[in-house]
Image (cartoon, rainbow, N blue to C red; front, side, top):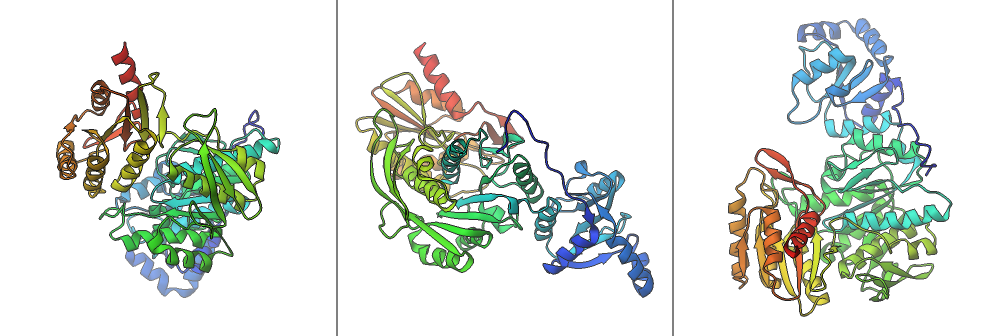
Length: 542
């Protein structure tokens, strides 16, 4: 990337004639019709006058479009306005018209608004196409690596950024590789906490354009199943698309109605990618289908695995890292070299995430030395994060594990690496979506934790106490009665620390890096699990 002392200017959309956008929509079979402004009677009259209609359409096609937007607060003169979303209101279009919009794109007409209508049959696809064109196809100027998976996307993204940053330093550059993750969105010009794992199309393309303007060569991003299903990445080219795993999560009326819908959405990553990276162990029962989709869409497929000699990138051996507590030295084989990679974790699932990052770096042509040294100092907020507590008898771990499978894997890892310690689990489950998590997480904790404190975790419009009660039922059904409910999350963490009587590991799961709590009234500030755990130990030791 460019010299950080000289901050580049944000990217701007290109100016083009409306006709170019109409052709783009028509060529992709999205354009239904173009309708003149005015009442239904006016438009019918215009259509009957063939010569007048042709002249009108020619004039419309020649209109210069300097901006494409889906927000009425972001409209300037010569804007093409996109009417999107189930909650869209005509008032938004009226506001856009007053601010300078010259036409609008929608699945239905709004005859009371005096603007021409570009009617389409799929507003999501249309928005993706228009966003990519308006920002001048920025992914064509970048090597983008995208990760999709039920778990581990963020860790893989941060691990790969560590490697790519090492490669940038080796090339004499001081900039950081742009990353679009669940935690943060840093495009080299703008850096903020993320609102969505994968931004909506106009935002995504703007950030990609900013990355190109900042001089980045590569970008790392997470591709959520919702983004793939609903076309947020339409028009975006991935140099590498990585399928790391899939599990039974995100199945609900407001996410994916069935597992088949979920899997089909994730497989779409390959349609955007030049090289596919596939975990041979990420979904054994679906591996044949995943590999078939990868080979059908991508000219090149690279596989990785912890325990398979058939993989292109494989783990040869692993040992504790001397002088680097909580880290592992992994000997990794690629088709071109073998390297010892220091991974900042003892968890086996993070060794798999490290292999994913190595496979993607190898696909991008990164050198052996950068791959070997790039992971050692990576910190992934809220992902198997060891929290310094200043006590030899107490270990704190904060992790984003928020379903049964993830919590079970996390607790198994803790039991294996901290023998002789009491394992204390503090967690809750979300409201509205992922209802099955209350069962899975309760059973996992009941089976693997010595003591459990159940608490609030984004209950939303549901009753947090009722959610906790369901979790407790499942903890007890696993044969564990050492469970209590403390609804206030910070107090729950304090309770877990206060009641330890021997060397213990306090595992706080579910929220990871997040610093807000979703309640019926909306999001409210929350200090964060790392901060709450640190404060609890400090205050109780005072």
